[in-house]
Length: 258
Image (cartoon, rainbow, N blue to C red; front, side, top):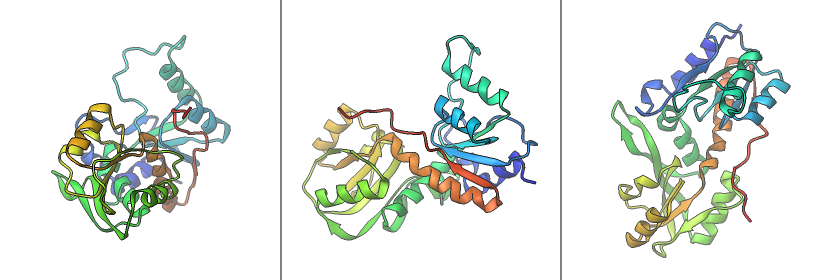
């Protein structure tokens, strides 16, 4: 019999919660450690659609990357608050939720390592080492097996990450050989990344883009939703417990390209 605590402990061996950033909220978001787990759903975000999917498919544990509860809840208002209703539906259907966020980002075999390997980078190193573990930390950098021009690299990137569109900030015309990547929201790090041919991250704003051009750096905004690849990582890892693990099939980027 596998319990919620068994899944939590297994995940914690992959990505110790001690690696989480101080501002983050990770761990058991909702539920009971002693509940039996029959089926797990892995997702990027715990949304209304994901919870409906879990209920429909008989899920009793959701493992998400982004925290179910991030900002403090001051009340549970079931009249018109979507977060309150998500929590109510989870409780009513006895669904527990575990969220592993920045600890999974930083873990030595966590999400950023997984993304770097998706690109088949070689000589992979940690971009920003964690103070508690120098083998862990945010981001990774490495080298492609061969140089590519920018257009070729973007096609390769979109194929490997299953992306329909990306945005590029072009600060120089170098061939692409060395690559840095930081999943999620990493625009603030453009000022301290090492000298690489291109930096991949999400949520790049206008001023960061202008600064990148001034610094002659290339950036590709792969979007925050690119972290949906975390579902592959989580599914493969949790399956080691010999339980049924499904990937959410209802998630999609909130942005529509017009």
